Length: 366
Image (cartoon, rainbow, N blue to C red):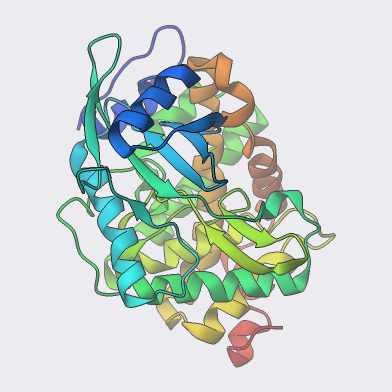
């Protein structure tokens, strides 16, 4: 394993060079006119280009003259082509095996290719591709309800079922956003300011390494979305409990299934007097479609905390490295620290029982 050093800023957490580079290499920054010319040359589509948010890649919305919209993705130059092919293959697999899933479709180039390689102005070569644009509003912009959480829990379970059996050579790639590999971020603890937050983060890292990591080899694993949260799920404006889109497959990988559930549940802690109310509704709905095994139930709450831990650690060092993108990078950081504080006084078993009630008793959603 290699460590990279960023100047100025803290150490990059340990990881393989290609994986760490994806978070330490700036995203492409083509001007709208350049994007427009690329889209017209590769796809024969003349459209208006609008920038979309992104962490590692440059994402653009393209609207053609007839009103059809697309998402044009310009990969981070450090992103291996094999990972782009992995994401494309997964989306096409879902479209074949579960066509009702609200995921984007791959748009082929004028000569029938699923992606193309281009050379940027600085000489770097990267991969571009286009997807259909899914209509809807991000869950983060809506009033959160139990019905919406239930829909999201069932929706993720159905997506995981659609991905069962899917394999790809790049599926086992390294990713710092993998909760089952949180121990690789231990190096980052010392970059936090000495005080309560560092102590809090260290205690949850210890909980992960001592109680969760040894059990992960015995639970189910498959390709998972790994980023099913309030920014990446779209709902209908007139029915905000109806999912119309699941987007951003950039963090997808082969990993423990329970990590998928925990990662998604973590984003439902905010917004209620009881921080476990939302996650319990979400997990209960998930289990009504795809029940967790007993070993998975025993660690799902631990992994929910672990997701908040890695969110805090990764966002802290990335915000220092890329201050121009700080607002986007830090969007989940305050909630992550708050959630860790809320869970700090609970034992592992207390957190598990609060998360799995009532789903632990009867396997049904509230």
